[in-house]
Image (cartoon, rainbow, N blue to C red; front, side, top):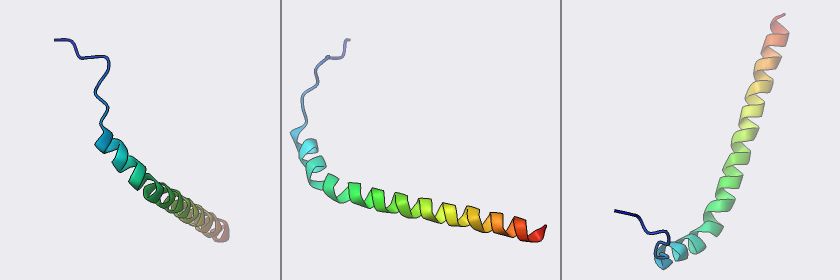
Length: 54
């Protein structure tokens, strides 16, 4: 059995994406930036610790 090339457009799902995307996208950007900052601070702390031990 062949799958149809064109699926029926799901308007309900598109409406949900349009409603929640402005909420989800900034949250993802903020949390991604915070995670990047925390990773960089951790790397700097590790590098400082290694440099001070020598």
